[in-house]
Structure formats: C-alpha cells, structure tokens
Length: 178
Length: 177
Image 1 (tube, rainbow over the protein chains, first blue to last red):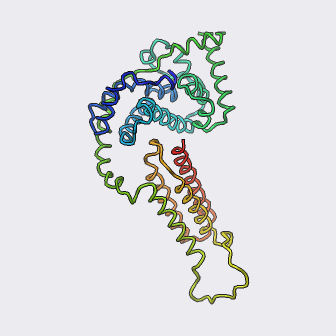
Image 2: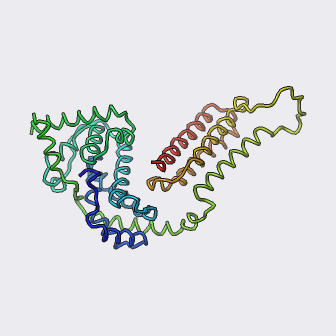
Image 3: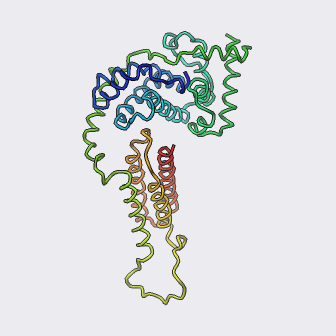
C-alpha cells in the first residue's frame, strides 16, 4: 500500500512492456494500463471523491504517462514513476476542485462494487472534508510524510498533521454510528 | 467509538486498487493516438539542440544582457551628454516602471534558467507553459505602449512575471530533488 511497497512484481516483463511502449507500441501500453489502472484510479477516486472526475483524472494520468514515456530512464521503478505522475495529477485536479467546490459535506454517490470489500470505510473516506481527505489519503494510504504532503498541497506541515488527526477522529466517530 | 487500533486494522484492509465502473480504454486509446501524432510533429523541435535547456538559458540570459545594455547606454539622439561628475551606477529605480519590472524579472529568470540542471518529467511541457506566460506578458506590454505607466497594466505585468517566476522555480527545484 505504501510507496515503499511499490516493487515490481515481475521486473523483466514490465521492462519489456515499458520499452515497447516507449517505441510507440499501443498494445504494450494497453497492458501497462490494465496492470496499473486500478491503482491509479484508486488514488484519483480517493482524492477527488467523485467517480466522473476520477475517471477523467485516470485518463489524464495515462495520457501524460504516454507522452512522457520517452523521458523515463529507469532511475526509479516504472510503478513508482507512474504513481508519482498519478498523485501529482490527482492533486492538481484536487486543487482546482477545491476552488470550484461549494462547501458541501454530502455523501458522494459511488457504487459499492468499485469500492471493493471495505466499502464502508471507503465511503466514509470519500465523505471526509476536502483537505482532511487529501491529507488522510496521502499519509495513510499513499505513504507520504507530512512534510511532503505540506509541499504537495501547499499547506503548513502542522496543518497536515492536524488535518490527519481530524480525519481519523471523524472516521472513528462515523464508523461507530454505522 | 472505534479505537485507534481498530481503525488502523480497517485501513490496512483497504485495497490498493479500485476498479472504475466502466472500461476507460476505449476513450483513452484515441487520445493516445492523437497525442502520438502531435508528438511526431514536435519531435523535430525537441531534438533541435538550439532549443534545449542550456541554450534556452543562454537565450534568456542574452536577452536580459541586451535589455540591460540598452537600458544603460541608450539615449535620445537630441540630448547632449552632460558632464559626468561621478561614476555612473545602474539604478533600476531610475528607470520607468515598466522597464524596471521587466529588467528585474528577466534578470531573475535568467538566473533561474542558468541554475536548471534537469527537469522532472511532470514538468515536461515547461517550455510551452513559459511561452504562454511570455505571450501574455507581450500582450500587456503592447497595451502599455498605448497607455504608458497605466497602474493596472503595470500590476498585471508584475503579476504575470511573478506567476511565471514561481512556476519556473518549481521546475528548477524539481530537477534538484
């Protein structure tokens, strides 16, 4: 789950797919998409809390990855590189969304099937206030440190910590109510 | 209320992957194909070494130098030189407001570009982004030609340069990490 866990499951086939994709092979890129879209979509949905926006963001991520594949030199694993683009893209959209969004705390309408087995907690995460949700997702699920989150979201490190504790507090309360 | 440990256990049970409700590939594929076609067109530009990062730095540095030289040495033809009693020192405060803004930001930009090593792939389109700001700056400068020293236009010019500078700072820092 954490970034440190992003090790390639099978380095060699992945490298081949990346290499073929770098040469413009769409079939190879489709396989990369199929292998990674679940993880990319997860971070997009959890950050944006909106299925339609998450789907757009997911596509945006893979367009960026496709466009920037030539720049991927293999200094880090492909998964790490891709996930960094995914997180940054989702955060950019989250930031835009923050400016547009009215301060509603409505429960997002997300179908249960796509939330997997931990449906209840997933729903509650999506219900968290905008900033608290972003901090919680980045810290607890994506493995970023508060200092990194502060930089990514343009907030103070202390705010990141307090938002994280607020998110946990809310989740514990809501889990008890349900 | 759930305990911290119970919450941690629930969090640990969350899946790292979630499936979209529909297959996104059919929509994605044409976008990738379009993108590949567009990329073919710009490959010639990208591979041109005269437009690479070091040369871009040199261009901006040169532009700043020329601007500085013009600012320092240009005088209207009908003015006779006055007797110089003290060494001339360059003082941006003596310039008109627009030139002072342009001079200070272009100088800072040249320094930023000169310090650029590599660029994080996230900022792969940084030159296009910079060009867009430059275009907007050009528009404001054009408006200033018709309305010299207009306070609102000067404010806009400063804001645009400031935004461009902040963006460039992020680009430069991305390559230092």
